[in-house]
Image (cartoon, rainbow, N blue to C red):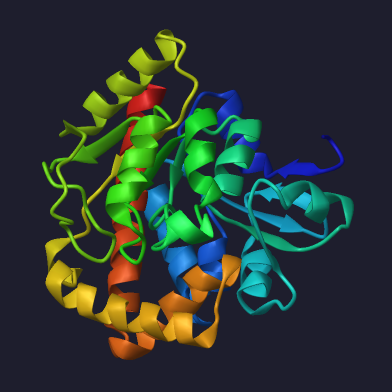
Amino acid sequence: MNDSLAVAPEIAEALAAGRPVVALESTIVTHGMPYPQNVATAREVEDLVRACGAVPATIAIVAGVITVGLGADELEWLGTAKDVMKLSRADLPYAVAAKRHGSTTVAATMLVADLAGIPVFATGGIGGVHRGAETTFDISADLQELARTPVTVVCAGAKALLDVPKTLELLEMLGVPVVCFGTDDFPAFWSRTSGLPAPLRLDTPDAIAAFVRAKCALGIASGTLIANPMPPADEIPATEMAFYIERAVDESVRAGVTGKAVTPWLLDRIFTITNGKSLTANVALVKNNARLASEIALALAK
């Protein structure tokens, strides 16, 4: 992999010394937010990770090279780049072989983080079981990746535009531990509550680190999903959000949107319907997750 994997010197040195590193995805830059807010948010998240005492590692594919730790110029370029693939596990080898540019989803970021030896990853929300999956079989590869890749993923729950109950059921079936941080209610991305009970609850980063160590000692090779409710001041209440989501989903069906295009299309439409409130909430929850992920990385590095 030497020719296909480039780890930034700062990150390589931190990993070699056992210092905390937090992996960050790049799909939020290419498909999650408009320019220039996408780049500004990515930089703010990296700065926040550093302020917490960890090293940020934003992951993307640049001309076929799996790049762990984007430089400032690369991040700026990615924010406006065209023809950037949205990569999951299945697409990653193609992007490497064909020397394409690509941003990494949760699944691909987990895979690369594990390849580089980074145990903790902060994202916005995971993918999951899409509405109507009983007929479309539209289920995110994120869930299978969580079942087989031993990375701790900090998120604000599953994206609320999914079938969240079915997503939790499938995670349970796959043997993925789902730990809610400081709450008995599974969070729903833009909203702090989903009305679904937390499968497990832990209240401190040290307790989460102890849980992860115990899981590893038992030889359980799955990832760990940490569901972190977003800050109260920035949330959109679940009842209000449900109205926006139903409207956007109906419009996507009428427009014939399918496959990988569904999530970015819905996020863009919800941004318009909410007059930008969903993006404000998105930025807040990503930062909140990066903070917790950094604290967990620090606890694991002790």
